[in-house]
Image 1 (cartoon, rainbow, N blue to C red):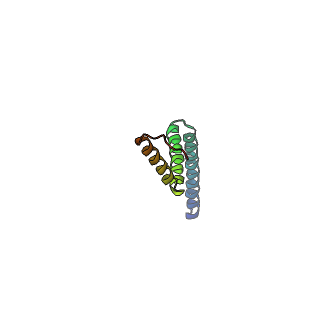
Image 2: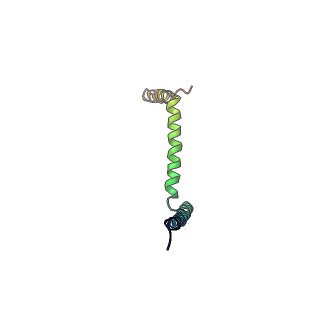
Image 3: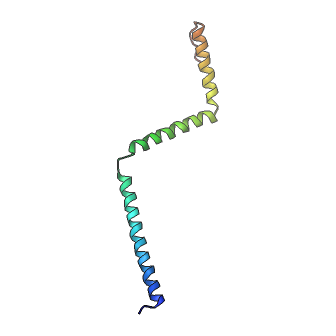
Length: 88
């Protein structure tokens, strides 16, 4: 007959083994998923969107959008007036 201590040790050992096997399966699944080509295009688009967002953020933080806006407005006004655009 098993004592409570023996039974508890056996259950803990079984739980540890099952946990180890499950974690190994999870690690294997994650590794295999990372190697798949499926979803690669979406990841590349997300990278491009990140770069565009960083560029827009830099333009806004450096207040370059105002300079660009004024220059474009000047070009449009020159063209509307029939003048050759002046490049500074």
